Image 1 (cartoon, rainbow, N blue to C red):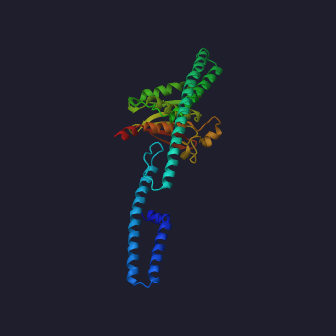
Image 2: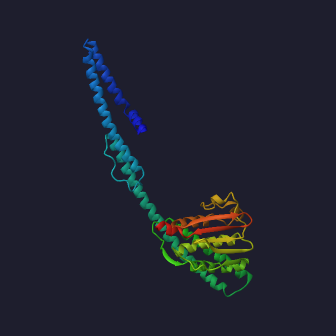
Image 3: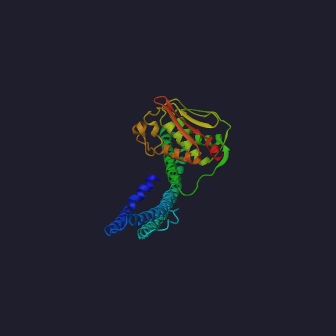
Amino acid sequence: MTGLFFSYLRQRRKGLLALVLFCAVFAVSFILYHLPVRAVLYPTLFCILLGAVFVIWDFSRAKRKHETLSEIQKMTAALIGDLPEPQGADDEDYQAIIRTLKREVADNSAVASARYRDLVDYYTVWVHQIKTPITSMRLSLEKEDTALSRKISSDLFQIEQYVEMVLAYLRLDADSNDYVFKEGALDKIIEQSISKFAGEFIARDIRLNYTPSGQTVVTDEKWLSFVIEQLLSNALKYTRKGEIRIFLREAKTLCVADTGIGIDPADLPRVFEKGYTGFNGRSDKRASGIGLYLCRQICKNLGINIQITSVLGEGTVVALDLTQYHLKNE
């Protein structure tokens, strides 16, 4: 309030200075004509009183206008409705500029949204089209069992993972709601994800330690599967020997743990940042820094808390708190 009042005084300083000047001229004129002091004092005080009343009234208007504009600042351009009543030609000009900019923002937003939808539609079709030759190649390779065919199958699987990442990245911020929450068996979701990596586990000679939990969760199965698959992909990528464990900790905290190379402590706070690859990513030129970023964004949309703990040279544990969705709805 005090800051606003002093700002108001600075803004009206010319008018206030003119008021004081007129009072001074008025008083000097009375003195020059040798009129009694009271005849000078009373009109001067009366003018000051009228000026004070005007300042109080004008400040209250300025205060209401400031409060209205402060509320408007919290809104997006699309939500801004009626502006305060203009108090002069300058206000009318500024409001005309604001309305023009608002229309321009709305037009640009509509164009950007249309382009984004076209981009998502194009890559959605592209993903489905590219899966056809991939599937065809996989079927052809199933007829052979050689070191080369197994290597090509592994490479094809990685291509499929990258294709799914492209689609997930594009759909992540789409306007349409692609999430369907329903209750389902957690083991079914996990087992479907594991089955996709069966060949990778065998090829890399990595043990899988998983015991069904019998738990049910309320979530979007497709997106949760994507998160689990990304975690399994990372675990396999950075585990040279040992095992990968999938287990429940506490009530409904799903953990994916590996005995891989671990994460440098300096990199842990930034592993969920988009494009950040860290020390491990710089040593593995294929790392994009997108996988864990997607996992965090999807988990946020699913109402799941995701955390990573790691010991360099010993392994990494990623924990998904599946109780968060229930807590938020309660």
